[in-house]
Image (cartoon, rainbow, N blue to C red; front, side):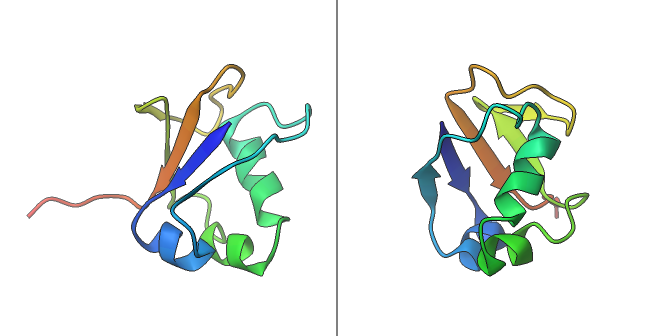
Length: 83
């Protein structure tokens, strides 16, 4: 699946996107965040506070318990504010 990173999540990981194949036990957005944190210190830093980072699956906002099966693209981004 394609993972896309925005704003400071992108800066901390050091790349705008990548294609990965998570293991079968990674079933939800929350599982994916845990798995990504274990991929290296840049991921651990980007996802150190999983309650802050938001996700979208195929351009639709997703909650941590949302299944990722069949997702073509998952995007991670910080919360946005208006002004």
